[in-house]
Image (cartoon, rainbow, N blue to C red; front, side, top):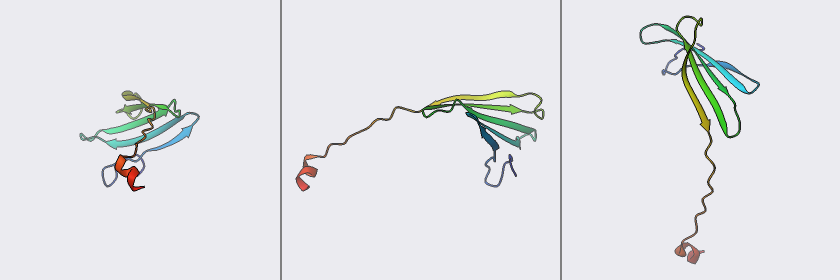
Length: 92
């Protein structure tokens, strides 16, 4: 049941990783019974960031509407050092 809502209510996506992008396609019926095609694209993938776009079509793929655009950036890693307490030092 690729690209359809399965038992448990989650969507199944099929796609490919090519070059520096991932394209995923899915399909389902919305609450009014309309057939929805959806395409998720991850691009600009680096160690620190990625760009994500979601597009939908309600006419069998003739036209597509941009649904979401998100740019992800990984936070700078913070190294926290916890100093032992006086009691910890005394017991070691």
